[in-house]
Image (cartoon, rainbow, N blue to C red):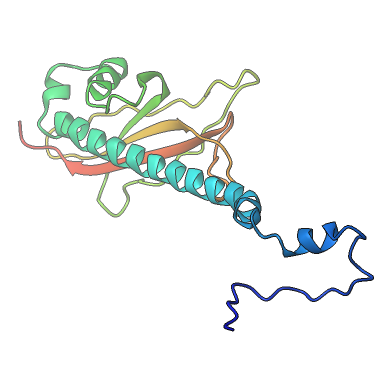
Length: 191
């Protein structure tokens, strides 16, 4: 007679088993093993997938902001902003029109400045300061320059995010936000 072995089962003697054999049946029963394994591993897998999705959304927002800064920089490079004497609010409105639909204009900050050379252009991340109410108090630069100037256009966006055990702490700013920055350095045309 052939024996079929699915799993190695522990050997118990009659003294360990309950008098009615219930203990022996309980030890031998493996019908709930898959549910038990999923109960242990499932929450961690779901948290991992949610962390991956959170990071993917941040990359999507970063790419959307980078496309926006390139289109907004073109307005400066071609002299459209200078010829129209755009204010900082008007330039922000023009940049907001280029934002992807999943991004909100009230979370966007604009910083435009000139540089003496490409080597001295400031392209780093801006550290935002907040008041007691959680409102950004930074004064952003807005200098469009003129023909042939090197101009740095920085767009900063406060992306709402949450901390995740498997994705690391993605929050970089107050209020559960991550500061996403996109920069373009350009030389204005002779418009």
